[in-house]
Amino acid sequence: MTRALTIVEWKVIKDYLASLPSDERYYRLRFILVLAYSTGLRLSELAFLKKRHLKMFARAGESDWHWELSVTGKGQVTREVQLNLFVMNEITHYFQRRGHASFAAVPADAPLIAALDAAEGQPTADQPLGAGRLYEVLKDFFGDVADSLGKDKYEMAERLRSASTHWLRHTFATHALHSGVALEVVRDLLGHKSLATTSVYVTTERDNRSREMERFGTMAVL
Image 1: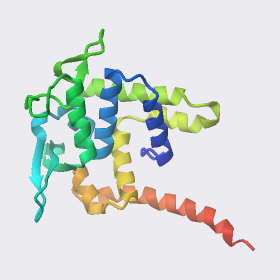
Image 2 (image 1 turned 135 degrees about the vertical axis):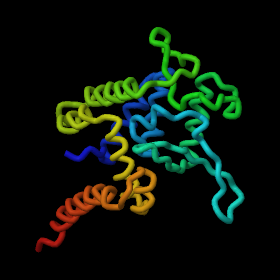
Image 3 (image 1 turned 90 degrees about the horizontal axis):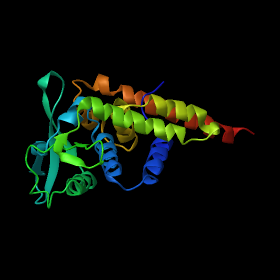
Image 4 (image 1 turned 90 degrees about the vertical axis):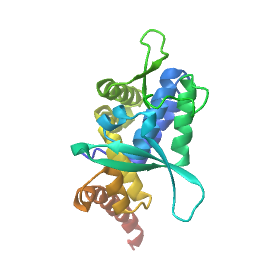
């Protein structure tokens, strides 16, 4: 079973998220999903991130500033993961929800993903959400999405019940390649050492294309 969410499954997840109450749990969950899906970071990498890991840079020949994350992954190897404007807006908004007046006012050691007070559901003064708890938050959420599906979507529900943080890493890679992002770019963002490791996600897309062409083949029947 592939551990990448399909486009349809990802839409189901987003639709369910949109139906939740707009409380602090919602905004944290929204941020976690956006960050994990848009970067493909590992669970440990997500939990370790702090504001100081956000860096600004200018692309060659351009005057505008852009953002990236300095991420230390397996083997203590550091890589840069570039962020789009949508993700940066989500980061800024999430910090504001946690009580910071502006992005500049956020302390350098503030975690990107914060814990919530168990009783009140409020941020706990920029205390980090540990990797174990982050895993549980997403597992519980995927389980809730699965429970919301009707009996006619049993297979999708079972897949979502199996989903975890690492599924979002696979989903990032698969969806990025499907959208036309170069294999070499996906390799570098994931922190893979070789294209061979990243190429496994291309196989998933090849399978999808094969299924589509099978369906299209019926059009040729005379």
